[in-house]
Length: 62
Image 1 (tube, one colour):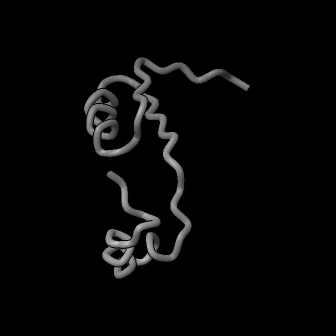
Image 2 (image 1 turned 120 degrees about the vertical axis):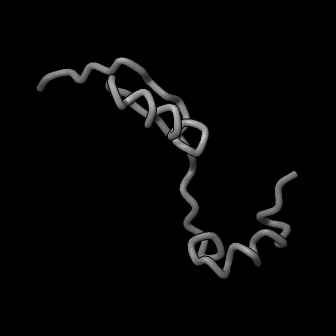
Image 3 (image 1 turned 180 degrees about the horizontal axis):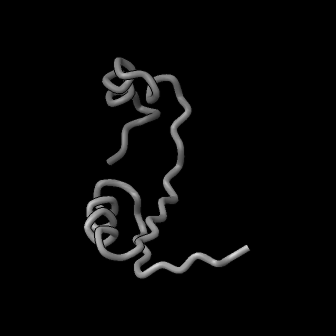
């Protein structure tokens, strides 16, 4: 097995990390890393549920 070599490592695969990863990988090899938790609750995974979740105490964040 060969080791992969990267020119850049981008920490954060959301909107903040994906844009620089896209630009940097145009000429070089970039490795985006994302450690976000997955959301498995039905209110998050269906479009209509996001509005309900936004106003539910269990999902609200300050």
